Length: 141
Image 1 (cartoon, rainbow, N blue to C red):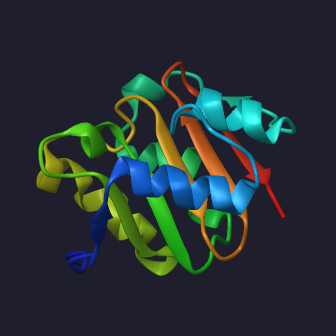
Image 2: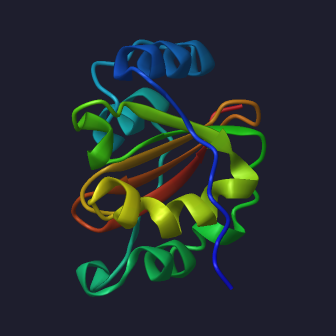
């Protein structure tokens, strides 16, 4: 089965930061896992051993990202977001696994190649992946 093409919209990192600050009700210095964890302060990290040996879909499944129940519109920042002409990605949560699966082919960068930030804009959850192999789901409601 071939995954469906995921419909994504891109916005600037600045716009992504403004939307996230509005959701959190606090100021951010950057759109990184470290900056968001500092702003949320109740983040509990889990370690993902040997994450560099796994492909993107395996990382999503091993960290249970595919089972988190994220809903509505997601704001996503990966290393590819900083590439020329990209930015932060907006997509429906139902398209998340397809987006992860397609990311390498579309952006020539693994989804989990470095820091990843996923902000659930309507449900008030933030999922973080740190470039050292740690992940966290934070409730910001």
